Length: 98
Image (cartoon, rainbow, N blue to C red; front, side):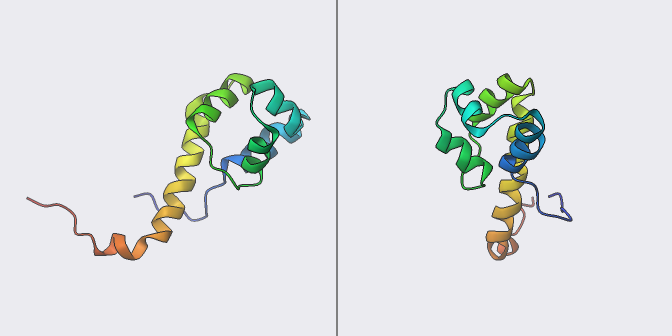
C-alpha cells in the first residue's frame, strides 16, 4: 500500500479550487449544467458527500477531463481514511502464504 506523507485532497476541494473558482462558475451554475441538485454540488464541495461514479462522469463531460481523474481522487481519499479507521484490524490480518 502506498504510504502518503499527507492526507489526500477531497475531490470536492479540487472541484472548488481548481475548477469552479478559476473558471468563475457558481455551484448553482454547475448543478444546473450537469443536471444535479445544488445540494449535491454543495455537499461535495464542502466534503460532506463522496463523489459517485455518476458524478465523475458528469464532471468529466462538463470540464473535459476523464472520469478516472475524479474517481482516482475519491479512491485515494477513501483508502487513506479507511486505512486509518481500521488500522488495528488490518494489523491483525496475516497475508496469505502457500
